[in-house]
Amino acid sequence: MDRRESGAVQSGASILDGESLCSHIRLLHVMAVSDPRILVAYAGGTIGMKETAEGHVPVSGYLQKQMQELPPFQADDVPTYDIHEFDPLLDSSNMAPEDWLRIAEVIQEHYSTYDGFLVVHGTDTMAFTASALSFMLHPLDKPVVLTGAQLPLAETRTDAQGNLLTSLLLLGQYPDRLAGVHLCFDDRLYRGNRTTKVNADSFSAFASPNYPAVGTAGINLDVDWSLVPASESPARSPNITPLGEATVSTFRLFPGMEARHLDNLLSPPVQGVVLECFGSGNAPEEEAFLDTLRRATDRGVVLVAVTQPLRGTADLNLYATGQALAEAGVVSGYDMTTEAALAKLYYLFDHGYTAEAVRDQMQTNLRGELTPPDDVPPALGRARRRLARFR
Ligand code: ASP
Image (cartoon, rainbow, N blue to C red; front, side, top):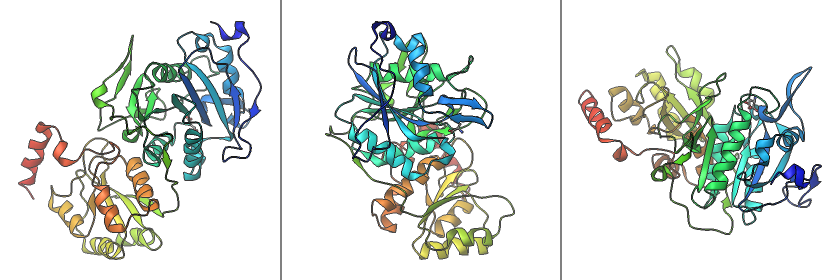
């Protein structure tokens, strides 16, 4: 049924839940024509932006207007959806942990009413939000998919239409099997906390360097169910751990850095730092640098090593330079992305774990965000054992 011809689309926005935490969110309702029902949480991003004299800016209602006018969005197989628009709509570069909380609260508040959730979001920090939501919302037995676009939906040549439609169709097709937080972009469905933005120009903006895409949109929408985490125990609605109270940070090592570069970063009140190390978790063996790390560890700061290369794992047991880091108290973050490691540090501290427990949990797989060393494919494991001989 064509929703426009049937007159089913209600244009115009109405306020929902005025007294609630979502009072800033407006609801645009597209009348239900069939189940399942999807809630679109529209947070902002290029996808709904309009060209103005000041450049591209998010404009309220603009995305919804395009979706109401474009015929593919009226097709029978597109599931019924309602749109919550955040106020203000944000360029995702302006997003902070309190915005992750607003998204999580919308999902929690409407959990029992909808079968799946589509978070429409800017691409710049989408991988951070996907990682954060995967920790904040627990347990989760329904799908949450994040998408956005490199060009606005209003442009003639755009990736927005495909990204939105593929996401909606996946949610409509597999509402009961696709539990967890995912990111859908350029015909790929990824585990959300495995993603990183890898290209500022291409429509293939995201990658999941250390975990295969869980789904591919070709002629069919194919999902490899062995890669989708088992649905967490059904809940009336997930609990939320708000993030952002903890003081955490990231630091990218570079040749020529000195201990003083880290002094400020590691001073109180910092609780945890993701160290983007060289190769498999390596760093200079310079004593002043290691001493700075050691003193921070002694103060209870949690230091986690991830790898600068796009692919691979930071395992501090492979090289002498990594061992020196381990002796200074740094723990292996294995193949976590920086985005996932940062979100996980926030989560563990904000959840109230002690520094010792955070160190332990950072090396443990909680939401599919890392591959523990025991789970690496056999060929890679052999290569690591060979390397270990050079320690
Ligand atoms: N700056 C935009 C944002 O992240 C870029 C995008 O959406 O692609 O909101």
